[in-house]
Image 1 (cartoon, rainbow, N blue to C red):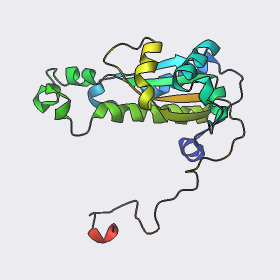
Image 2: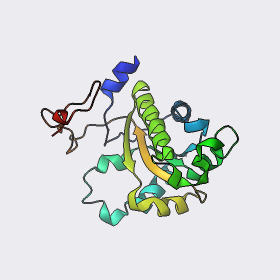
Image 3: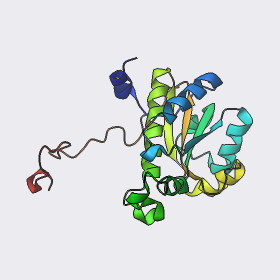
Length: 205
């Protein structure tokens, strides 16, 4: 599949068939994800793969207990046979930017020296690689946030201190499902996406 085709075809899939995904395919997707850009080549984004039924069930028990599932809008999401939890370690960026070739930036002094925290940016880039790789592999994928469940998920799966959970990508073979509430949302009419040369006041009211 051409890259452009994968980008255009990508959708958030919220219902999955129960059949498993080949672990080798998941490994390949994680390898694609790790090749995303990384500030200073810090390479501090890692992946917790849950692809055994007991592991997946444990994740949902922690984040969506059985007594709350009756009203869950996306029951097919819980059927995903594999989950990839994406994590980043902010301190790794401080350590990297304290090294000799980066020390002059001052970014190693603390997170407050990063107007844009690139640990989140790099994790987002890795996630997009993962999502596009899933399309290329003929799989569906859905990214959802850790939200208030981050400490519980980290504890349940032994995530070391210092690592932040950015979100989880559900992977599997797509099953039919209704479109999400945001599927039809479009940018406001007349709101430009691209500004050439200057972001003029008249461009954005």
